[in-house]
Length: 300
Length: 287
Image (cartoon, rainbow over all chains, first blue to last red; front, side, top):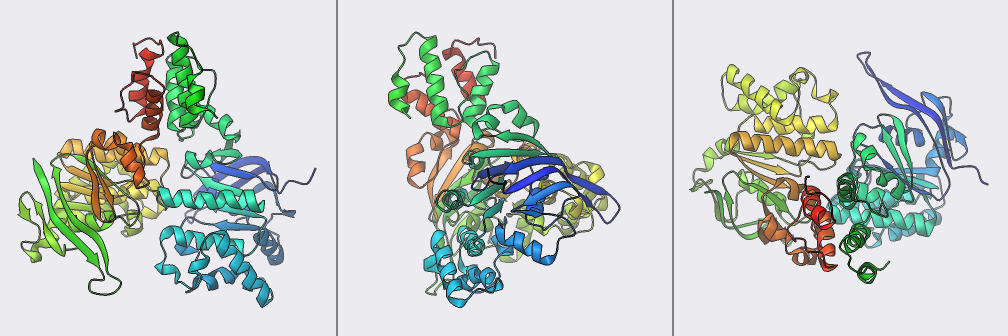
């Protein structure tokens, strides 16, 4: 069994303010991430999820506990070379691409990272082209970033990270500023990176419909890890989600409300289709209608 | 009663150049006094341009906008007074906070209205109450607040002008469920107390379904659909044609109908679905 890509043990972090007031963002978080996993990190605003992301690529260093990322122990004593090595392995895409794009031409922006790695010219060219193709922005390689739409800019920002060929990408609320179509578009790119390129993905979000798409969901609340499981496991507990300020998908919410009214269901599905099938089966059973029809309509 | 009327309004950017973009094309609309309207459509459909015309930041190329029956551009020099009557909250308004304290920031609008200090203080307190900002926070720097709180302070700054029409561009964007709820509850409270008309851009069909009574759907600069939320959400296929949808619970209900359950189509919230389903599933009807 290979070493986990990320190992966090009792991880803590406290911000100290100018006026002596300090805010504890993480109060002892432990988890491991294996290479190739697709994980959603879910939490409300101010839960500590962005602090976690900053610890994972060395923007911050742990206040307490231990954190190992891609074989490097993350501490404040790390040399610049070590931090640089971690950042080469763990790329990060932020919420606002305007804060991440630096050049005046798309392909120059994507080349910025590989150039800093000191790679040969042909290698840079190949990586830039591959990265732009992977996010569907190759046709725009000679465009000016400020002429692009929000979602196109975000795709360029992702290409810039991809061109570094990291082992893992962290998306820190990278869809929050996009409209639903733009979000779906970025989510497709995220899924593709994980599925086709085997990249480890940590997607930080408070959109539960995005978290549902991951293989595993971590819920952070007030600095602690309050849930860790498959989307189905995490979303089945509607009350626990509410306690940490999050909603479940509406289908799950509805079935939970009906369960509180004393209706029993055979399963705890998440998607609207599965919930409808489950409610229909219950209806047919309650009213003595011969079952089976839901299988025709909503067959898996 | 119509409070706001748009007659054949058009607006284009980069007019007369090869880059010309017709952002708003021949829009005619009536907005009822006291209503809460959800304005939906994809990025680039002209929503934000339309909002900017409503409070006179942009002037229509052709057509006119009537507030209480009077063309807002009748006296162009008086257009700044319109901005006290039609309050606009732009996207990510928290980036526009600038004053030293939360209270001073909320007071900025009323101060420009040349109100007395007493009246300004009263309005700041009232606006803070609507959006759920405790008075103890008024002396703090805006930069000490969380993102959701900053957003509510920015909205309070517009509410403090007591606008008859409150126009907001995606006020809940990027906020978590509790933050979204706090914003929409604030808008609802202000509307109930003042009788103001609210027009709100949102990408969340669930939020529109919960808080709005009317809807305007824009597509490529034109009004694509318009009416009560029942009218609009009952035509899911038409919404889907332009890549929009209905609330998830409404979609679930139509799947149940297709499966033979006698349940009405016009269900837009989880609570309504629960109420309609309970008797059908053999549950007690006490709920």
